[in-house]
Length: 238
Image (cartoon, rainbow, N blue to C red; front, side, top):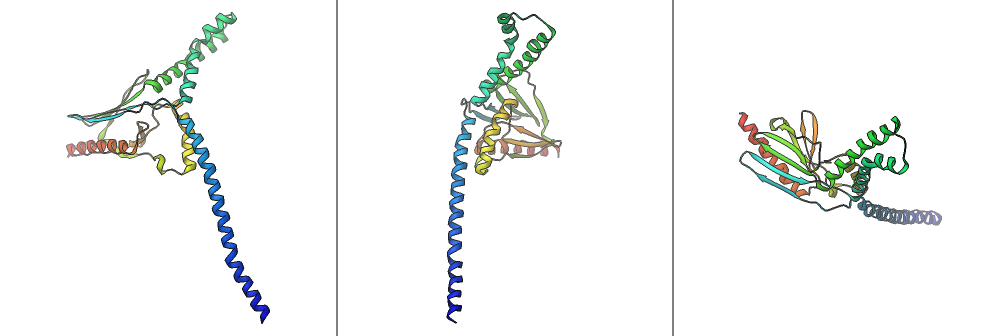
């Protein structure tokens, strides 16, 4: 009888103590994990540092809207593209310093491949330091264009064929791990793209991304203006 009471009390004590210890260990583990992730996040923000060019404007016109948004850059992309611009002169420098004979291989590498890569780098560098996104809606036609670099052309969309204008996921809505990954991916996007997109819309089955580095209020204003113009165009068809 007494042995039974002792065993029962031991079981009750174990049920009370172990969950508490386990809960404390789990809480401590989560706290350490979050601290490490936060440290990594702060480090990843170094990848996004660049020249400040923030400017967003939007205004209504008699036949639509005009909007403008500066390009985004980071110091990493600026240095990489600036270095690649040097390839434009690598053939001349190599021939002058080393006095290499002009062979077919030399021409292909230094005066064809290097020049092409250098032009691509120069085009992207000019965009990073001076580029602007331009959006214009005029008589139910949305035109996207760019200025500040070369080899660009406008793209036109019929507003009646545009659907689902929406914002991209904001950083505040991401988990800490996703924020880290997003900061790391940013440089890859800026190296090869002009627009990584803060607002998207569907056009004939394709997702079109427009503008970069907009805050929540700017996204909302742009979306509302575009949706208003789409609605007006739909009403004109009726």
